[in-house]
Length: 197
Length: 156
Image (cartoon, rainbow over all chains, first blue to last red; front, side, top):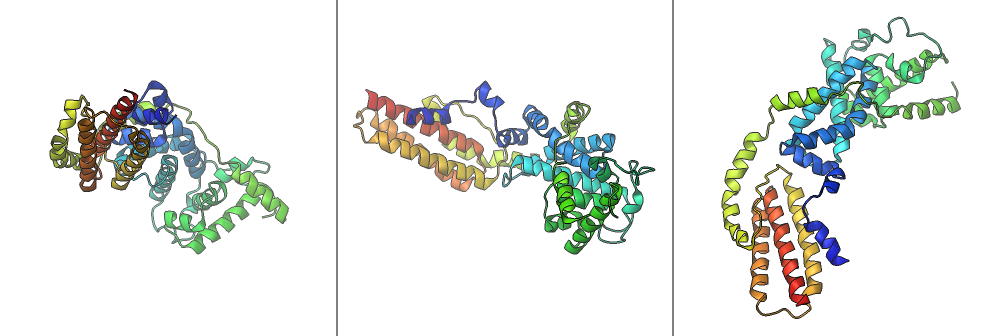
Protein backbone atom coordinates (compact mmCIF):
# COMPACT_ATOMS: atom_id res chain seq x y z
CA UNK A 1 0.00 0.00 0.00
CA UNK A 2 2.88 2.27 0.85
CA UNK A 3 4.54 1.48 -2.44
CA UNK A 4 1.39 2.24 -4.32
CA UNK A 5 1.06 5.56 -2.57
CA UNK A 6 4.65 6.45 -3.33
CA UNK A 7 4.39 5.42 -6.94
CA UNK A 8 1.45 7.81 -7.24
CA UNK A 9 3.85 10.59 -6.41
CA UNK A 10 6.32 9.40 -8.98
CA UNK A 11 4.36 8.58 -12.06
CA UNK A 12 4.05 11.16 -14.75
CA UNK A 13 0.77 12.90 -15.32
CA UNK A 14 -1.75 10.70 -17.04
CA UNK A 15 -4.73 11.71 -19.11
CA UNK A 16 -7.07 10.99 -16.24
CA UNK A 17 -4.96 13.15 -13.95
CA UNK A 18 -5.10 15.97 -16.46
CA UNK A 19 -8.90 15.74 -16.44
CA UNK A 20 -8.94 15.85 -12.67
CA UNK A 21 -6.13 18.34 -12.33
CA UNK A 22 -6.58 20.78 -9.53
CA UNK A 23 -7.12 24.45 -10.07
CA UNK A 24 -3.72 25.08 -8.55
CA UNK A 25 -2.06 22.70 -11.00
CA UNK A 26 -3.77 24.34 -13.93
CA UNK A 27 -2.90 27.78 -12.59
CA UNK A 28 0.76 26.84 -12.28
CA UNK A 29 0.85 25.61 -15.85
CA UNK A 30 -1.01 28.69 -17.03
CA UNK A 31 1.44 30.87 -15.12
CA UNK A 32 4.25 29.30 -17.10
CA UNK A 33 2.49 30.13 -20.37
CA UNK A 34 0.25 27.14 -21.03
CA UNK A 35 -2.85 28.66 -22.60
CA UNK A 36 -4.52 25.24 -22.76
CA UNK A 37 -4.38 25.03 -18.97
CA UNK A 38 -5.77 28.54 -18.78
CA UNK A 39 -8.63 27.58 -21.05
CA UNK A 40 -9.45 24.75 -18.63
CA UNK A 41 -9.54 27.29 -15.81
CA UNK A 42 -11.79 29.49 -17.90
CA UNK A 43 -14.17 26.60 -18.62
CA UNK A 44 -14.35 25.75 -14.93
CA UNK A 45 -14.84 29.24 -13.59
CA UNK A 46 -16.50 31.27 -16.34
CA UNK A 47 -19.95 30.79 -14.81
CA UNK A 48 -18.92 31.92 -11.36
CA UNK A 49 -16.93 34.90 -12.64
CA UNK A 50 -19.67 35.92 -15.05
CA UNK A 51 -22.29 35.45 -12.34
CA UNK A 52 -20.80 37.90 -9.87
CA UNK A 53 -19.97 40.41 -12.61
CA UNK A 54 -23.53 40.24 -13.93
CA UNK A 55 -24.94 40.90 -10.47
CA UNK A 56 -22.57 43.82 -9.90
CA UNK A 57 -23.20 45.58 -13.22
CA UNK A 58 -26.94 45.09 -13.05
CA UNK A 59 -27.65 42.37 -15.56
CA UNK A 60 -26.25 44.21 -18.57
CA UNK A 61 -25.47 41.14 -20.65
CA UNK A 62 -23.05 42.67 -23.13
CA UNK A 63 -21.20 44.70 -20.50
CA UNK A 64 -21.00 41.71 -18.20
CA UNK A 65 -19.55 39.56 -20.97
CA UNK A 66 -17.00 42.24 -21.86
CA UNK A 67 -15.99 42.44 -18.21
CA UNK A 68 -15.80 38.68 -17.85
CA UNK A 69 -13.46 38.63 -20.80
CA UNK A 70 -11.46 41.45 -19.25
CA UNK A 71 -11.28 39.66 -15.90
CA UNK A 72 -9.80 36.55 -17.51
CA UNK A 73 -7.28 38.57 -19.50
CA UNK A 74 -6.21 40.25 -16.24
CA UNK A 75 -6.03 36.86 -14.58
CA UNK A 76 -3.71 35.62 -17.33
CA UNK A 77 -1.48 38.64 -16.85
CA UNK A 78 -1.49 38.39 -13.06
CA UNK A 79 -1.06 34.62 -12.74
CA UNK A 80 2.77 34.66 -12.74
CA UNK A 81 2.58 36.72 -9.58
CA UNK A 82 -0.18 34.70 -7.92
CA UNK A 83 1.26 33.32 -4.67
CA UNK A 84 -1.28 30.52 -4.11
CA UNK A 85 -2.07 31.85 -0.65
CA UNK A 86 -5.76 31.52 -1.44
CA UNK A 87 -7.76 29.15 -3.60
CA UNK A 88 -7.61 29.92 -7.31
CA UNK A 89 -11.41 30.19 -7.37
CA UNK A 90 -11.34 32.77 -4.56
CA UNK A 91 -8.64 34.73 -6.33
CA UNK A 92 -10.58 34.70 -9.59
CA UNK A 93 -13.75 35.74 -7.81
CA UNK A 94 -12.04 38.72 -6.21
CA UNK A 95 -10.43 39.66 -9.48
CA UNK A 96 -13.86 39.57 -11.12
CA UNK A 97 -15.30 41.84 -8.43
CA UNK A 98 -12.39 44.26 -8.78
CA UNK A 99 -12.75 44.33 -12.55
CA UNK A 100 -16.47 45.08 -12.34
CA UNK A 101 -16.01 47.76 -9.69
CA UNK A 102 -13.18 49.42 -11.59
CA UNK A 103 -15.49 49.65 -14.55
CA UNK A 104 -18.20 51.20 -12.38
CA UNK A 105 -15.70 53.74 -11.13
CA UNK A 106 -14.43 54.65 -14.56
CA UNK A 107 -17.98 55.06 -15.85
CA UNK A 108 -18.65 57.84 -13.42
CA UNK A 109 -16.69 61.05 -13.52
CA UNK A 110 -16.04 63.05 -10.40
CA UNK A 111 -15.48 62.07 -6.80
CA UNK A 112 -14.47 58.74 -5.30
CA UNK A 113 -17.05 56.26 -4.04
CA UNK A 114 -16.94 57.78 -0.61
CA UNK A 115 -17.51 61.33 -1.78
CA UNK A 116 -20.50 62.97 -3.37
CA UNK A 117 -23.40 60.98 -2.00
CA UNK A 118 -25.22 60.49 -5.26
CA UNK A 119 -22.44 60.71 -7.81
CA UNK A 120 -22.86 57.11 -8.88
CA UNK A 121 -26.54 56.89 -8.23
CA UNK A 122 -27.24 59.57 -10.78
CA UNK A 123 -25.78 57.37 -13.48
CA UNK A 124 -28.82 55.16 -13.43
CA UNK A 125 -28.97 51.96 -15.39
CA UNK A 126 -30.84 50.94 -18.51
CA UNK A 127 -32.72 48.45 -16.39
CA UNK A 128 -34.04 51.14 -14.09
CA UNK A 129 -35.32 53.39 -16.83
CA UNK A 130 -39.07 53.32 -16.61
CA UNK A 131 -39.20 50.21 -14.53
CA UNK A 132 -37.85 51.30 -11.17
CA UNK A 133 -41.21 51.34 -9.48
CA UNK A 134 -42.68 48.27 -11.07
CA UNK A 135 -44.36 46.02 -8.54
CA UNK A 136 -43.88 42.31 -8.43
CA UNK A 137 -40.61 42.28 -10.31
CA UNK A 138 -38.45 39.38 -9.38
CA UNK A 139 -35.72 39.85 -6.86
CA UNK A 140 -32.85 39.54 -9.31
CA UNK A 141 -34.27 42.22 -11.52
CA UNK A 142 -35.04 44.43 -8.53
CA UNK A 143 -31.41 44.23 -7.43
CA UNK A 144 -30.32 45.09 -10.96
CA UNK A 145 -32.34 48.30 -10.86
CA UNK A 146 -30.62 49.62 -7.74
CA UNK A 147 -28.18 52.53 -8.12
CA UNK A 148 -24.67 51.17 -8.84
CA UNK A 149 -23.06 51.97 -5.49
CA UNK A 150 -25.95 50.69 -3.39
CA UNK A 151 -26.20 47.63 -5.61
CA UNK A 152 -22.47 46.91 -5.28
CA UNK A 153 -22.64 46.99 -1.47
CA UNK A 154 -25.83 44.93 -1.34
CA UNK A 155 -24.53 42.31 -3.76
CA UNK A 156 -21.18 41.99 -2.00
CA UNK A 157 -22.72 41.84 1.50
CA UNK A 158 -26.04 40.09 1.13
CA UNK A 159 -25.36 37.90 -1.90
CA UNK A 160 -21.63 37.21 -1.87
CA UNK A 161 -21.25 37.24 1.91
CA UNK A 162 -18.47 39.82 2.21
CA UNK A 163 -17.87 41.75 5.43
CA UNK A 164 -18.26 45.51 5.59
CA UNK A 165 -14.52 45.91 6.16
CA UNK A 166 -13.74 44.04 2.92
CA UNK A 167 -16.37 45.98 1.01
CA UNK A 168 -15.14 49.30 2.34
CA UNK A 169 -11.55 48.50 1.39
CA UNK A 170 -12.51 47.36 -2.10
CA UNK A 171 -14.84 50.27 -2.78
CA UNK A 172 -12.47 52.77 -1.17
CA UNK A 173 -15.06 53.98 1.28
CA UNK A 174 -15.42 54.13 5.05
CA UNK A 175 -16.92 51.13 6.85
CA UNK A 176 -19.72 53.37 8.06
CA UNK A 177 -20.48 54.35 4.49
CA UNK A 178 -20.68 50.70 3.51
CA UNK A 179 -23.21 50.08 6.28
CA UNK A 180 -25.19 53.16 5.31
CA UNK A 181 -25.21 52.08 1.67
CA UNK A 182 -26.44 48.63 2.63
CA UNK A 183 -29.26 50.12 4.68
CA UNK A 184 -30.16 52.36 1.78
CA UNK A 185 -29.97 49.51 -0.73
CA UNK A 186 -32.31 47.33 1.33
CA UNK A 187 -34.72 50.20 1.73
CA UNK A 188 -34.73 50.79 -2.03
CA UNK A 189 -35.04 47.09 -2.70
CA UNK A 190 -38.10 46.80 -0.49
CA UNK A 191 -39.62 49.71 -2.39
CA UNK A 192 -38.82 48.05 -5.71
CA UNK A 193 -40.45 44.86 -4.54
CA UNK A 194 -43.56 46.72 -3.55
CA UNK A 195 -43.05 46.49 0.17
CA UNK A 196 -42.94 49.24 2.72
CA UNK A 197 -40.44 51.88 1.63
CA UNK B 1 -41.53 44.78 6.64
CA UNK B 2 -41.17 42.75 9.85
CA UNK B 3 -38.16 40.81 11.06
CA UNK B 4 -39.44 37.57 9.55
CA UNK B 5 -39.83 39.20 6.16
CA UNK B 6 -36.39 40.82 6.50
CA UNK B 7 -34.81 37.43 7.18
CA UNK B 8 -36.71 35.89 4.29
CA UNK B 9 -35.47 38.63 1.98
CA UNK B 10 -31.87 38.09 3.06
CA UNK B 11 -32.20 34.37 2.48
CA UNK B 12 -33.60 35.04 -0.96
CA UNK B 13 -30.73 37.42 -1.66
CA UNK B 14 -28.20 34.79 -0.65
CA UNK B 15 -29.96 32.48 -3.06
CA UNK B 16 -29.03 34.79 -5.92
CA UNK B 17 -25.46 33.64 -5.58
CA UNK B 18 -25.34 31.32 -8.52
CA UNK B 19 -23.24 30.73 -11.58
CA UNK B 20 -24.34 32.41 -14.78
CA UNK B 21 -22.74 31.10 -17.93
CA UNK B 22 -21.98 33.72 -20.59
CA UNK B 23 -24.40 33.50 -23.49
CA UNK B 24 -21.51 33.37 -25.93
CA UNK B 25 -18.28 31.41 -25.69
CA UNK B 26 -15.80 34.09 -24.65
CA UNK B 27 -12.73 31.88 -24.92
CA UNK B 28 -11.82 32.62 -28.58
CA UNK B 29 -11.66 36.35 -27.81
CA UNK B 30 -9.79 35.77 -24.56
CA UNK B 31 -7.33 33.48 -26.32
CA UNK B 32 -6.72 36.12 -28.96
CA UNK B 33 -6.16 38.81 -26.34
CA UNK B 34 -3.86 36.84 -24.07
CA UNK B 35 -1.70 35.95 -27.07
CA UNK B 36 -0.87 39.64 -27.25
CA UNK B 37 -1.11 40.53 -23.56
CA UNK B 38 2.22 41.29 -21.90
CA UNK B 39 2.99 39.44 -18.68
CA UNK B 40 4.98 41.30 -16.07
CA UNK B 41 7.15 38.45 -14.94
CA UNK B 42 8.57 37.38 -18.32
CA UNK B 43 11.86 39.26 -17.77
CA UNK B 44 12.14 37.95 -14.23
CA UNK B 45 11.78 34.40 -15.53
CA UNK B 46 14.61 34.96 -17.97
CA UNK B 47 16.87 36.18 -15.20
CA UNK B 48 15.83 33.17 -13.13
CA UNK B 49 16.95 30.77 -15.82
CA UNK B 50 20.40 32.36 -16.02
CA UNK B 51 20.78 32.46 -12.26
CA UNK B 52 19.81 28.83 -11.81
CA UNK B 53 21.82 27.38 -14.63
CA UNK B 54 24.93 26.61 -12.48
CA UNK B 55 22.77 24.59 -10.11
CA UNK B 56 21.27 22.72 -13.01
CA UNK B 57 24.78 21.86 -14.24
CA UNK B 58 25.90 20.87 -10.75
CA UNK B 59 23.10 18.36 -10.54
CA UNK B 60 23.70 17.00 -14.03
CA UNK B 61 25.22 13.79 -12.74
CA UNK B 62 21.65 12.65 -12.41
CA UNK B 63 21.57 12.36 -16.18
CA UNK B 64 23.89 9.37 -15.90
CA UNK B 65 21.10 7.59 -14.09
CA UNK B 66 18.84 8.12 -17.06
CA UNK B 67 16.70 10.89 -15.69
CA UNK B 68 15.06 13.43 -17.88
CA UNK B 69 16.28 16.91 -17.19
CA UNK B 70 13.20 19.01 -17.35
CA UNK B 71 13.77 22.73 -17.17
CA UNK B 72 10.34 23.71 -16.09
CA UNK B 73 10.73 27.14 -14.57
CA UNK B 74 7.20 28.16 -13.78
CA UNK B 75 7.38 31.17 -11.48
CA UNK B 76 5.90 29.61 -8.40
CA UNK B 77 6.04 31.35 -5.06
CA UNK B 78 9.20 30.62 -3.11
CA UNK B 79 7.64 29.34 0.11
CA UNK B 80 5.34 26.94 -1.74
CA UNK B 81 8.11 25.21 -3.70
CA UNK B 82 10.26 24.80 -0.65
CA UNK B 83 7.39 23.69 1.55
CA UNK B 84 6.45 21.16 -1.09
CA UNK B 85 10.03 19.90 -1.14
CA UNK B 86 10.13 19.57 2.64
CA UNK B 87 6.88 17.62 2.72
CA UNK B 88 8.07 15.39 -0.12
CA UNK B 89 11.41 14.77 1.60
CA UNK B 90 9.66 13.85 4.82
CA UNK B 91 7.30 11.46 3.03
CA UNK B 92 10.11 9.68 1.20
CA UNK B 93 12.30 9.47 4.29
CA UNK B 94 9.44 7.87 6.20
CA UNK B 95 8.93 5.36 3.42
CA UNK B 96 12.64 4.64 3.08
CA UNK B 97 13.15 4.20 6.82
CA UNK B 98 10.86 1.20 6.74
CA UNK B 99 12.62 -0.34 3.76
CA UNK B 100 16.15 0.46 4.96
CA UNK B 101 15.72 -1.82 7.94
CA UNK B 102 16.12 -4.77 5.60
CA UNK B 103 19.73 -5.79 4.68
CA UNK B 104 21.00 -4.04 1.53
CA UNK B 105 23.24 -5.77 -1.02
CA UNK B 106 26.78 -4.26 -0.88
CA UNK B 107 26.84 -3.68 -4.64
CA UNK B 108 23.80 -1.41 -4.45
CA UNK B 109 24.90 0.53 -1.36
CA UNK B 110 27.20 3.01 -3.23
CA UNK B 111 24.40 3.91 -5.64
CA UNK B 112 22.04 4.51 -2.73
CA UNK B 113 24.64 6.70 -1.05
CA UNK B 114 25.08 8.68 -4.27
CA UNK B 115 21.35 9.25 -4.51
CA UNK B 116 21.16 10.34 -0.86
CA UNK B 117 24.03 12.72 -1.51
CA UNK B 118 22.35 14.16 -4.59
CA UNK B 119 19.06 14.59 -2.70
CA UNK B 120 20.93 16.51 -0.02
CA UNK B 121 22.57 18.66 -2.69
CA UNK B 122 19.23 19.44 -4.32
CA UNK B 123 17.69 20.34 -0.96
CA UNK B 124 20.63 22.61 -0.32
CA UNK B 125 20.18 24.20 -3.74
CA UNK B 126 16.51 24.72 -2.92
CA UNK B 127 17.53 26.62 0.20
CA UNK B 128 19.37 29.08 -2.01
CA UNK B 129 16.88 29.02 -4.88
CA UNK B 130 13.49 28.24 -3.36
CA UNK B 131 11.72 29.36 -6.53
CA UNK B 132 13.31 26.69 -8.73
CA UNK B 133 10.61 24.27 -9.68
CA UNK B 134 12.98 22.12 -11.71
CA UNK B 135 14.91 21.38 -8.51
CA UNK B 136 11.68 20.16 -6.94
CA UNK B 137 11.16 17.89 -9.94
CA UNK B 138 14.73 16.65 -9.66
CA UNK B 139 14.23 15.95 -5.98
CA UNK B 140 11.13 13.93 -6.74
CA UNK B 141 12.97 11.89 -9.36
CA UNK B 142 15.94 11.36 -7.10
CA UNK B 143 13.77 10.08 -4.27
CA UNK B 144 11.78 7.97 -6.73
CA UNK B 145 14.99 6.40 -7.99
CA UNK B 146 16.22 5.89 -4.43
CA UNK B 147 12.97 4.19 -3.50
CA UNK B 148 13.00 2.01 -6.59
CA UNK B 149 16.59 0.89 -5.99
CA UNK B 150 15.87 0.22 -2.33
CA UNK B 151 12.83 -1.84 -3.18
CA UNK B 152 14.86 -3.81 -5.72
CA UNK B 153 17.62 -4.36 -3.19
CA UNK B 154 15.17 -5.59 -0.61
CA UNK B 155 13.43 -7.89 -3.04
CA UNK B 156 16.69 -9.42 -4.33
